Image 1 (cartoon, rainbow, N blue to C red):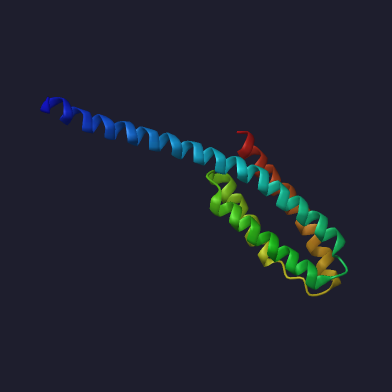
Image 2 (tube, rainbow, N blue to C red):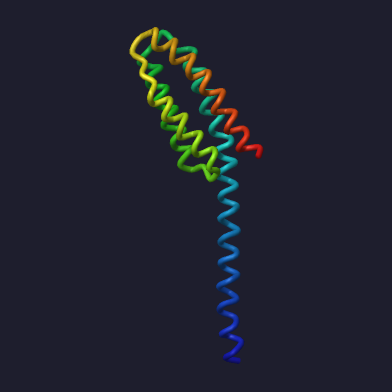
Length: 129
């Protein structure tokens, strides 16, 4: 009887480890799926805000910073390396845009449109691949 108990303990530990690894993969998939939903939503909202705020440099600057913070959050939660890196890079780009006047706002709107397209292309590839 003693022999069976000693074999059972390692077997149970092994089963628990396999189960834990399996759950980790499920969480990873959920995190990727969530990032694939959130990232385009943030960019779409930013695009809508930027086009409305070309006459309000301060509000646009705040919108850019808010979007950067949200993208950083997506990057922190993203289980996929490509999504994480793309979100980090785009967040840095948005944080680096300073809008102090209407001319800056127009330039920022153009940059956001161009960089958003490139970012969404990377995220789409990562999410479908």
